Amino acid sequence: MTSTTTEINRSFVLRTVKNVAFEDRPVPKLRDEHEVRVHVAQTGICGSDVHYWQRGRIGDFVLNSPIVLGHESSGTVVEAGSKVTNLKVGDRVAIEPGVPCRRCDYCRAGSYNLCNDTIFAATPPWDGTLAKYYTVASDYCYKIPDTMDMEEAALVEPVAVAVQICKVASIRANQTVVVFGAGPIGVLSQAVAKASGAKKIIAVDISQSRLDFARKYAADGTFLPPRAEEGVDSVTHAEKVAKMIKEEFGLGEGADVVLECTGAEPCIQAGVNVAIKGGTYVQAGMGKENVVFPITTACIRALTIKGSIRYSTGCYPDAVHLVASGRVDVKSLITNRFKFEEAEKAFELVKAAKEGVFKVVIEGVQ
Ligand SMILES: [Zn+2]
Ligand SMILES: [Zn+2]
Image (cartoon, rainbow, N blue to C red; front, top):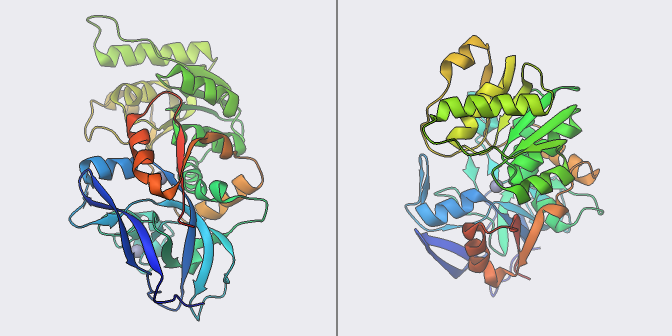
């Protein structure tokens, strides 16, 4: 199937910081014979999309020219390059939004999330998936079973992020896990930890409604940390919070694994303090670039401290399977649905971060 000359690629474009617009762009051509063109069906919005829209940069990635937004998408293959063997026109797919160079040492070691030359959707200078069509390497598209709908397939993306977090943490059966943050990545990490056999999962957040959801979803217990008392420094307070968590949930000397999915300084400090000696602490949340970190505690407890970013070899197939098998339910995360024409409204809603708004999805162009 080839595109007709009259067809256009309606796209939701971030032109400059805080300035978005719909543009009718030409239908993208396959860049090589291994690519497919996907008619996008559903796109989830995540914090990073909103961040680029509001600030125009995340770390080294700076918006210097317009980009199409969106990176959590599903769709149907409408065109396949001559060398594509894994997919055919009509296949329904979950799109992995980052295609690495495949040749560098990181790629060859399987850590392709570290590749310096990744084409990542909606990360400057690369266009994202909030368009009618998106072209992508066929091996970064995963055919989904008939039982999986397009919303679920779009939300395979944040599940893959959670799979990587749990993989970095090497979560094993019967471990205790404390997860800071009960937003989408936090609760999905709790669900993946549970699917990995964790025996007790405790969710920590400052929002009671998010904790209520986490408790129904995958957490075995929830904790809302108290505010620091007047005159008590943050490090002392973090030690107190950690002690409260350990006592309330019978974690003994501490949790085997701590997953930090907020990036908030008080959570980072409490997280290090709640880990058991020899335990693992994984930083997945991003907040302030620099924080006061309890480095002596980390050293004395011989913690393994690791960072987690995006996803690596095997995460996407695992995430598709977790969703397809029903072991991770993504459907119940969706609170708001928008038509493509309402994309800006969808972004405004995510930005406002109102109580009750959890995961927002945007339908593709018909
Ligand atoms: Zn995302
Ligand atoms: Zn590479």
